[in-house]
Structures are given as structure tokens and as C-alpha cells.
Image 1: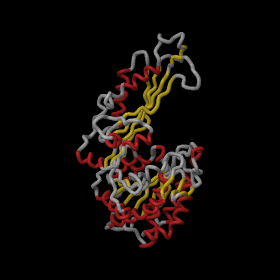
Image 2: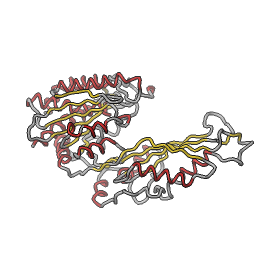
Image 3: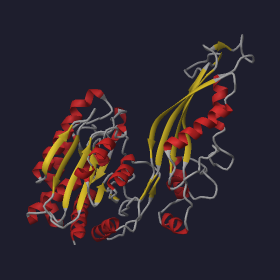
Image 4: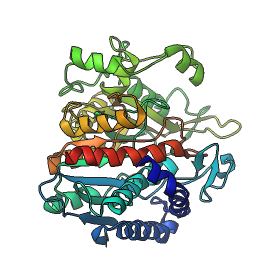
Length: 451
């Protein structure tokens, strides 16, 4: 298949550039038509490679694209998920090329969405095209579920999955929206933390007050907020909210060993980040802290006067933003209630508090020894000459948990990005070497599943 990829390489890259030119920014209402154009582009690409029953399914915001090919009798069915929406491109002044004018430099393609997720999604479409053109058929049954709301937390996809379990039923869900450990070292993520986000608003007086006239005699909302936020951790870096660790699984020796295989250079990281020391929950390594342990982070605080110059006031309002990464059986709603109770319990009588939840997602853990995942590992090893590692990601892809739970199918996080590719940042890019080898790897994987 490698030779076939080289024959069509220039056309494939040209087509990818067309895809990347579409500013399908799901979070900005002025790009609603562009997002729909992205859906149309994906649907037409599926039709061109022989997918059937292709449809653009409207939701309350941005459409879902579905397509399938179900003629491999007795063979497994693979559901391929991806997203055609992208992040906003600002700050534009930090881009060295135009974000929606794809540019190739040093065998990398630069554009918003290049690695997240248009380039990785397009790998699957081109792999199926090559297999079908060479054999006239596919080795397995294939379904596509491609959304346009991933970058805004997929509000409409979970109910769609719940309502279409039979339509989406598959033996494996394959997602290419993750990255290698480093160049040349493939990875199949087998754990994703859940997520919870909230905002805490503290109020004292009905207006800011003059610090000369009232200072020392009235409550200060910023002081109250800082007391609240500082109470959320103990001196060992643990979250000090009663019940927070309920549902957190014990860290087994096998899991520790799997995590220890992931390369990590502490001195290099400290130098890159410009810090003098790492920090975290005592008793766990950095990779354990960021992959399999829960966290509570203060993301930002506001209150009082913070503009240029000085304003001598006693602030009447302050707000803090908090996010948690959750693991195991921690339930986001339960954790939210525990934090809410903790904050309410320490609030002084002279202040009121309003707490609002924004984001929630459950953690997901995947068995690295599952045959569908091991087949992917074999495909990577054949193409790259290196067996993939199985990292535990600290981030969250909420839809993974939904697919695994509702469809009761293993999810194979078969990514081809690199950590250095600036996803969500200026100068996002995708290594074309992994675009080509990714196509080859997917072809190999589907053939292995057939066998």
C-alpha cells in the first residue's frame, strides 16, 4: 500500500488543503455557514470513496455527518469518529502563515485544524479509498460519525448516540484525535480523565467602597474568595474537600509499570516551562499525577480593580474559576455537590456565594489488552517499526466515555499527531510523514481486523 500512497500523495495533500481552507469554527456564530460547508465537504468525500447512506443530520446547532459501507458479511464493524470543526485562529498576529490558507513547509502542513482534527480524520477517508480502489471491496464493515461541535464540548452528539444505538452499533470505535509520545514513537491512549468546571462568585456589599472611609470596617469580597480557594488543598497537594476521593481507584503495580514506560525527563520539562520545581500530590510521579490522579485547579480569579494605575477600594464582588480532572468512578455531579458543600460550610455570615457548574464529563479507562487495541498496536508496529506505548492522558475527550458506555464497544484512540504541533494555538501544523504513514497504518489495521 505504501507505493499506492506515493502515487496519490500529491492529490491527497491537495484535497486536504481544500478541507483546511474551510473556516469551520464551531464556537463563533458568524461561521455557522462555514461549519455547514465543512459538513458538506466531509459528506461529499465519503460519497466519493464509496460510502453509502451518507447523510447530513441537523442538530440544534451544527450537523453530524453519517455514512456507512456494510457489505463485509461475517466481518467486524468499525465506527470511525472524528470532527470537522476547529478552534478560532486568534491571535492572528502570532501566525507565521494565514490560518486558513494551508502552507507546506519542511514536510509539515500549517493551518488551523491541520492536526486537530481534519488531517487525522482525512487519513481514514483516504485509507478506505485506497483499499476499495485496489480490491473493489473493504475487509470490514465501516461506519462514520463525524461531528461539527467537538470544540464546543459536543452538546448534541451524546443524545444522538443514545437515540441511534443500533445505527451506530460497532465492534470497535476508532478515533484519531490524539498524539504520539514523540516523533517516531506511536501511542494508544488507554485512559482519559473526566472533567468538571465551575465558577464561584462571592458578594459582600452592594457596591465597591472607599478604602479610606470603610477599609477595616467592612468585609472585603476578594479576601473572602482567597480564603475559600486556599481551603481547597492541604499542604501535601491533596484536595481537602471531604469525599472528593470517593471512587478513585487504587494504583496497581501493573498500572504503575505501564505508566513508568512512558518517557519523562524532569529537568528538560522544567527548563522548557521556565520553572524551578514540579508540584503535585505527594507519593505519585509526574506522569501518575497528570494521568491517573484527580485534580482541582484554580483557573483564574477576578475582583476589585486590576487595570492600569490604582484605585483604593474595598471590593464588593470577586469570582474564581475552578476545574477538576476526575478518574475512576468519580461522578462529576457528586463531586460538584461536595465542592459546593465545602464552600458553603466555610462562607462567613457577612458574605454570599453563588456557584455555577459549566462542564462535566466522566473518566474513561480502556483495557490495553483488548484485541481491537492490540490489533492497532500490531498495525503501528508493522508500519513504524516500533511498538506503541499506552499512555494515560490527563485531558478529557468526553465523547469517548459516551461511545464506550452507550455502544458497549472498545474505543481505539489511534492518533497520528505529535505533541509539538500547536493544536489550539497559532501555527498549528501536521507532519505529512504521519499523514502518509497514518494512511498505511489504517489500511493495515483494517486488514488485521478482517483476519
